[in-house]
Amino acid sequence: MLSQLVRGPLLVPHPGGAVDYHPDGVLAADADGVLLYAGSWSGLRCQLGDDVPPVRPADGVMLPPFLDLHTHVPQHPIRGHFVDGVADDAPGGKLLAGLNRNVFPTEAKCHDQAHAERVTRGFAADTLAHGVVGGAAYMTVSAAATEAALNVLPAAWSVGMVLMNQNCPLDLRTNEPALEADHERLAARFGQRVIVTDRFAVAVDSPLRRRAAALAGRLGLRTQTHLNEQMAEKSFVETGLYPNAGSYTDVYRRDGLLAHRCILAHCIQMRPDEWAIVHETGSVVAHCPTSNLLLGSGVMPLDEVLDRGIPYAIATDVGASPTVSLLAEMKRFLTVHAGRSTRATPTEALYRTTLAPAEILGLDGQFGRLAAGRPMSFVEVARAEPAAGVAGGVTADDIIRSLLPADVDRPAAAVRRVTINGKTVSH
View 1 (cartoon, one colour):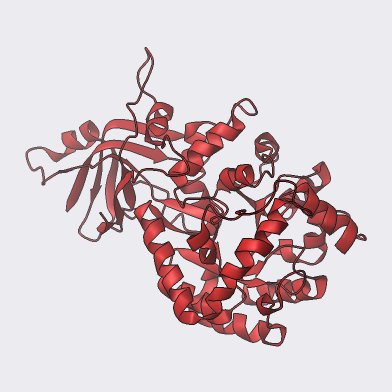
View 2: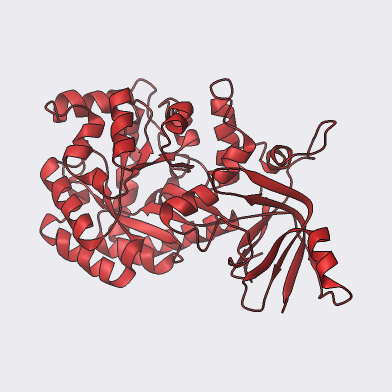
């Protein structure tokens, strides 16, 4: 029995990246919030006859909820302020300078569990208001703070307790004797939501990384880290810290980190042999165009990733990004790749912020697909500007572009409603 019908413009991503646009669409679900129909209103109307249940007009364009494949919960209070007070020519690069000046002191505050909970609640409210319902996040080195984040965040969020034991403040170093016990306890309670999280090769030595990789294998957990964000970082890793490794990427390969569905953030300063390792190990990429631009890191080579068939999703990397909005991130994606790749289209951007991260995270049974038999989970987004089509009509690309904010650093509140499993959770 049809219980809920919501009618309005509808965007439906498909595996592989195609997006259907229904100018007059409808989502129809039963009382349990399971979709019975997703498509054009005319296609459903002809099946209903005279028995038409009440229809709610959509409060904007309907599309799947967003998922953020790479973000930092404890940095939410300083989002957009990652490099405040850092010179463009800072020794070692803006990334390392920003970590030491702004990020590490902020993360140290989360040793206080009450503070960690407050920060996580603020993050949870902000992401939901922007239609972001889950993803993969970093917390801090504190097991208590990580547990607090997993407690507060909805189940679609996976969280990692950050590993660090070198080139970082003493109060932000991993409690190495408790490494296995902490992860075992968290995994026993939260299962696959726990991610074994290597900060990056600068801050983690090989013995700790190898223990962590072995732990991921034993507990069946995936891994995540940062890779090749800036040239100064890459040089420090390859010539200063690990001169016997074949490359920055090879450090992770030889230590076993890439054997566990690893999420690799950034991947900008890569060589062909490094891309080959990423592909061969089945690792995936979190592409963060705003962070990469604001930190002066460069632009991820999109065509290289696509040509090699490496899965990727667009992510925010808060707090280097000033906003948790993936609509803003989609706009930045189109901007930074303009003139570099013809494959950076609005439909590609929508797929890489909805269904692609759902597939990567194993959440595509819950999110990303709007089809009969799937949960009725979607967002309603107001248009920032009219959809300007051409003589052939308005396309999915036109509609998606009309949803993207003009100001990507301070995007307007465009998400009007978030529905999960047929129930409104934000309005």
